[in-house]
Image (tube, rainbow, N blue to C red; front, side, top):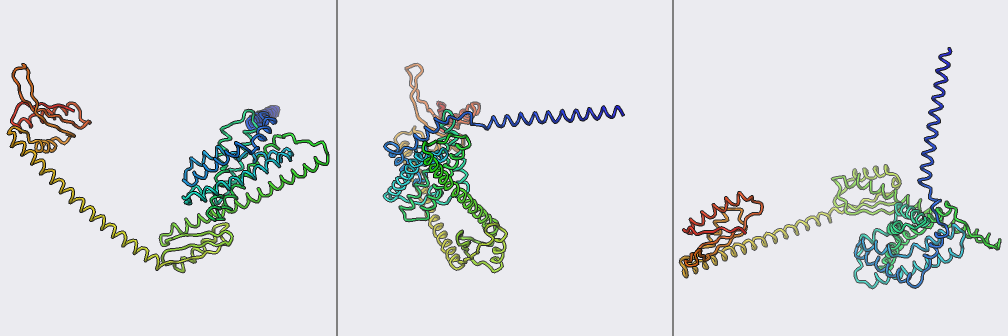
Length: 483
């Protein structure tokens, strides 16, 4: 009995020891995580407010910087150049008033809020006017992928704006602002391109582009301001106190109302864009799984109408009743688009005509190319014959004038056949004297070999080449020089 009690007591003590160790480990991990993520001690409240207020001002040089950045961004979008668009984002001063809106609501600063809203509205109008004038006057106005990428925001744009705004305001509140973070957020949140795209939409009279681009800009603005508001509230920035109690109360009510106005659209925007993103994702899944991967269907184009809840598919060729029923039944298995109406459009006759026309054009093009190739081959044969006749004429003339001349064309042709590694060859007669009294005539052959050949093979080839030329020219005085 005594032994059992001692064992039980020892087990209980060991269990308590393990629990204490686990608790101590958890406390250490908790402390480490809090120290890792806590940035309140590294905050400079006065410097942050001063820096944000200094960036709100919009006049003089700032106005010209905005105009230049709008021109640069518009040119980049027009030229479909991502690098140019990024450069425009880096020099844009649009971020200042947006941070000012979020900060002024957080610290109850109605004067700064009024100034931020006025400057932001002025910047937006000036940006739209500049972009409109550029695209209206500039003759090249193609719809590039950089432009079209800013007319339909999705849930990713909301998340980029919110987390980019968080990163920016956290960097702003840090002692010693992190410039690289500010530049990175300027690129990621992309405030300039949507305004330029909105100006493009006005210039070409496409209000769908204008509204879509302004919607994207509004999303970026709201969620950057919202992120600024939340971070400054979390850090406990001191709210401005007013001497007049009635004014203080009124200002607090106005700031709270504006904060509510910012929060409510942000929530509705997030939910709306999220639902649209899910609808678009399921729509693309339906097309890929049931239409594109079906070898019996030839889809010409498609259209999704979210407002009318309609999916229109335009096919080349005939679509059977069984296939139509299959597509309608399969559509019901995709969430968010299961209630959409599926409209099937066939275009059999027109598609056959297009195929026949395309085939006829392809046959004509092939015939034309064959004729061109035959003509070129004939010209090449004629040139070869002309060159061969010229070489023979030159050599016969040389033989007529000098019985000891060398038939170089014949020698070089046969040398290339015998020694395939010869890349270039020249042959000449030179005068030489060893005693400076008697003059001898020697044949010098300069040869350029394949660079990949080893020296041992080169020496062997040169000896064989020398022997063969001596035999052909019936002379022992042949020198081989390597180029």
